[in-house]
Image (cartoon, rainbow, N blue to C red; front, side, top):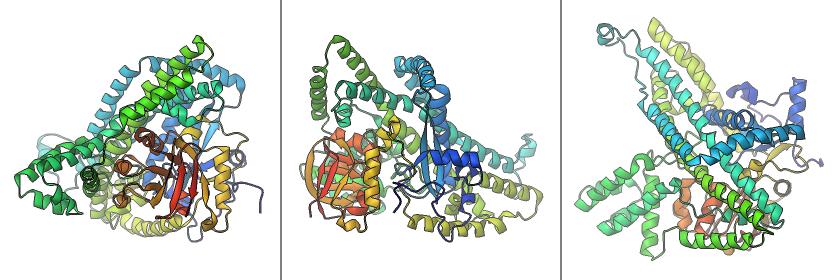
Length: 612
């Protein structure tokens, strides 16, 4: 066996039957063997699988968001705010899976120079945070409105005569091309705004974490995160709407109707027959916009349905809350208890500081972290959820036209094409329509798409290695640690599991201690938000990762374990807000733990043990 923890990036073999898969993605995403300089660079970097954002292989079109944050995060780090220890984050794809590598600043003199720029520029944002985030909200809402206003219209056999009489001078064919370009531009622009504040939000937390770890060398990272917990963010508002609808159902006396059905349409049909039911449906309709523009997944995949796309998703959660209320259980986040514990922990550590100067620095860094933290969660509602929900719908409108003209067999086939390929296909479609000839696309794309479907299936059956390349002696890039949960210790733990001959022999896992406390209970493995209704009260949720759609689960469970994530990932943040133990970034929990097994979760040490 090789003494390498992980394979070399250029040694990972192509899956038989997928030869040529690289053409499905931008050329710069491929690891390169025939460019000596680039190959040397790639071999010298450490690349880890971004399972936090991409738990499954990425469809060619869906890569748009990866391209968008590849640009946006990197530019803000490198060219705008000049984050001292790291440039951007480089990206590659192996067999359909995204791998990323933070690019460190190695020259101490350059780091010193970048510090000056960062303090001036980031300092301005920190000092004017409230005004700038208010301006940001206006920009992002305007971007969403622009997207919603785009019209994707079929091509007519003959343009309306008003095109002539009004002197418009443009065709529906041109409008289709223009609409597609505008959609893509708005998507990239939206992600420019996504990262305007995000790196600074994490940087404020990391700076406070660094201060605390220097003052208190043994302090767990979760203690630092506790000090900024108990903050209200709008990302929780969608879940609050569901809770309000559950309470309203009980007040109106229609809860039995809701609980009697698993499909919303069946319940809706019955509710329309009675005044209280109609009242409740009107309340639900009012809550839908914008709050039901929440993805059932991360929002990064086209198949992550939003609540508005499938009302069974929020309906299931409303029923969970009704059942909880009926049992006399609280469905509220224990906000006051979390804040009391936050204040106790904060006072305890503050009192240990050696002098007033250290206390003043502690107070300032903590206040900055608290000020910026809401953005870390809030931006997701506007971008990954609201914007993406509208965006996927608009792309399907384009797909309907491509299907009508024979370019694709099914609307869902569009995701097998790169965004540039779609633009080329639309030009073929529109020019053929304009000219009165048959386009070439119907003979080109259906067979290519069919081949790509087979490739995607083989990608799904393949197990991507957690990382490729040689890990640095010490992983200290802050975002890699706090968001993705990648450390030298976690990599060793993942490698140990990977090398195990039989996963059933593994009885203990190690991850990030994300939220303190220790509990034992029955495990429930849920790989998607559509499975959370099967959760029973008091179980321990084991999931690849979580998103806001998983919120109702936290009213039923007593601990959470995830495959991916660090102390600032969604599952970690929510568990701290609910005051329940959590271990994240275990790497393999969903592959090893089985539903029904009794497990012990120690959120203070990061250990998960299978008891029986």
